[in-house]
Length: 452
Image 1: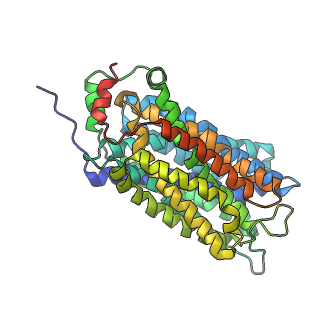
Image 2: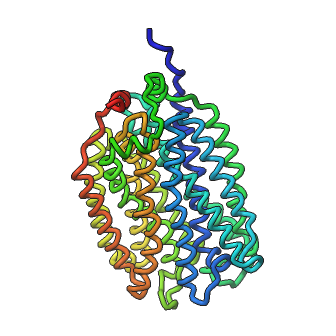
Image 3: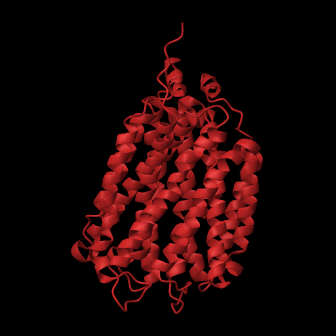
C-alpha cells in the first residue's frame, strides 16, 4: 500500500500564494529601482556629475543581481531538502526586513559613506531574498497545477512583476504628487519628498509582508515534492547534483532568460531615467515630468500584465519553445525600432512602452513553467533558481549600467541601447533553437529520473 499523499492545496490558495509573494517581492525591488533614479543619486551618491551619481546608484541596483544567484543556491538547498513552504516564508521575511530598513536609513549628509555602505548591504539582502523567492513561487504554482495547465498556473507568480511595479510606482507617484512644490521643476522630486516622502513606500512594505506570510503559512507541500521525499530522492547537496547531472539545462535555462531580463530592466529602470531626463542636459532625455512619465509607464505595464496572462494559454497550445522563439524574434525587431518610436512624439513613446511591455509579458509568462520543467523534483528549486538568477547577472545586473553608458556614448540617443537589446535577444534565440520542448514532461517522471 502506498503512503497517504499530502493534502492537496486548493487551486485558489495555490494561485494566491504564488501571486502574493512575488507581488510583494517585486514591489520591494521596484521601490529601490524607482528611488535609484529619483532620490538615491542625491542622498547616497553625491557627485559633481549627475550622470556619475546615477551610474553609481545603478551599480548598487546591479549589486543585488549579483547576490541573487547566492540566494538561489541557499534557498534552493533549503527548498529541495526541507520543502517549498518553509523556504518561501524565510525568503519573504528576509526581503521584507531589508526593505523596511532601507526606509529608516540615514543619508550621506548625515553619516557619510556609512549610509552608502548600509544601503548596499540592504540591497544585497534584497537580492539574496529574491534569489529564493521566484523559483519557490513558480514551483508552488506548477507542482500543484492540474494536467495541461502548468503554463497557465505558472503565469501567476509572473504576474507579481507587473502588479508589484504598479503598486510601488503608484505609491511613489501619489506621494510625489502630494508633496510637490508649486512652480518646482517637474522633472525633479520636491524637497519634502527628498527629506522623508521617499521613505514611505519602503516602510509600507511591512504591511504587505504580513499579508503574504499569512497566505503562505496556510500552504501544504505539493504531492510532487512529498512523493519525491518519500521515495528517498532528496539530495544531500542539490547544487552538486544539478551541476553534475543537469549542467546543460542550467546553461540553457540561463540563456533562455537573458533577453527577458535585459528587456525587463531597460523598460523599467532605464526608461525612467531616459524619460525624465531634461532635453537640455549634456546627455539629454525625453524631458517628461516624473508624474507624467510614471503614468505612461504604468499604462505600459498594464499590457505587461495582460500579455503575461495571454502567454499561458498560448504556451499550452503551441508549446513553450515555439512561442518564445516567435517572441524573441519580435524583441530583436523591437530593439532596432527604438529611435523611430521615441522620436515620434508622445504617441510614439507610448507605443514604444506598450510594445516593450507586451513583449515582456509574452516572454516572461512562460518562464514560470519552462524553467521548473527543465529539472527533476529533487533539484528543481535549485536548478530553476540558479538559471533564473545567474541570468540576472548577465542581463539585469549590467543592463541599466550598460544602457546609461551607451546612452551617454550616443549623446542622448537610445539607438545603441536598442541595438544592445537586440544582440542579447539573438543569444536567447540561439539557446531556444538548441533547446527542446518541455510541455509534455511529467513532473513526477522527472523526479524518478533523479535516481539516474
